[in-house]
Image 1 (cartoon, one colour):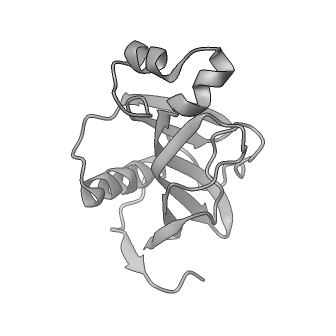
Image 2: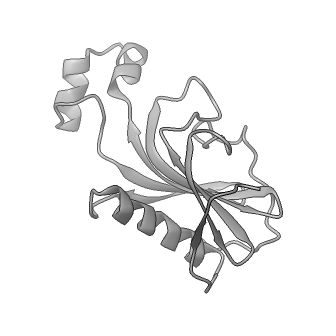
Length: 153
């Protein structure tokens, strides 16, 4: 997904699974004119979402929330009662022993959601954050290296 810096601002009502822009921010970066926020287990735009987001990055330009890249996984505990299935049945269907399905990478911006498929990269936080940062830089064709910032505004 490629976005222009003048793209429309994120519509938090467009998808139930969009990360709230100020929720659970653990780090902030600046790359050119882009402020990048890293979120751990943030609130989503809808409380009824059956998705867990362990880690996400949001991009903001001139105070406008324009883009999100994040790791998403189905929350089997939330899905089971909605589907009329037991947690054990869903775990068998997904081939997992835990409460979540496999992680997928999802992108939101320009009024659309795009899936990059299942994440198969390194599991450590720093590798995952670097992966999300690279997606944002590529999305906006930004060549500046992200620098961590301490003061958010």
